[in-house]
Image 1 (spheres, rainbow, N blue to C red):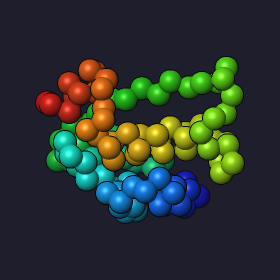
Image 2: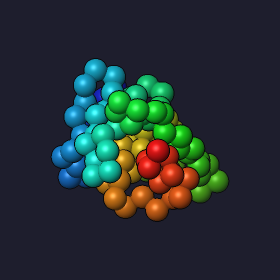
Image 3: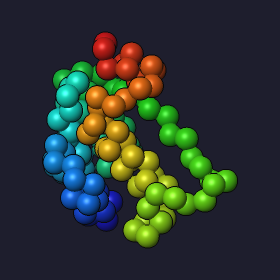
Length: 102
């Protein structure tokens, strides 16, 4: 189900540098190639190490991202990571940027 949701949203968001293969989203970013597991949300730089990205859940602010498709917060987390790494030149977080330079 999550794969179908991601596939549907990719076209809605106009993201064309992501391919879904098995249980992974394969992303060709400007800073590198990434693999995000659709079950766990674990991110790996292809041919390299795991990238740590900690989600910040906004339970007190309500469901803002994908409540119309799936109420599972893990789906919203994974979709957010896909969007983030598909546009990796826009990443400003120094913790993530340090990991991308390793």
